[in-house]
Image (cartoon, rainbow, N blue to C red):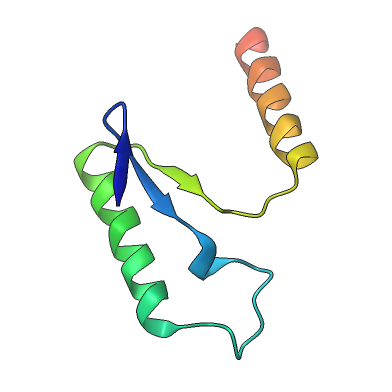
Length: 72
C-alpha cells in the first residue's frame, strides 16, 4: 500500500467487477480488503486506484457531491 499526502492508496483491481470467476484471486482480494480496513481504521480515508469506474460516472459523483454541498 502506497501513500499520497498521508492518504493511503489501495490498488482495487483485485476486486474489479470486470474480472471473471477464473481471474479472481482470493489471496489478492483478502489483501485488498485488509489494506482498505487498515486505511479506514487508521486515517478514515482511502484512495482507490484501478477501480475501472468509467470517467463519466466519477464526474457525475463529483457533481452530485457539489450539488449536495450547495443544498446543505
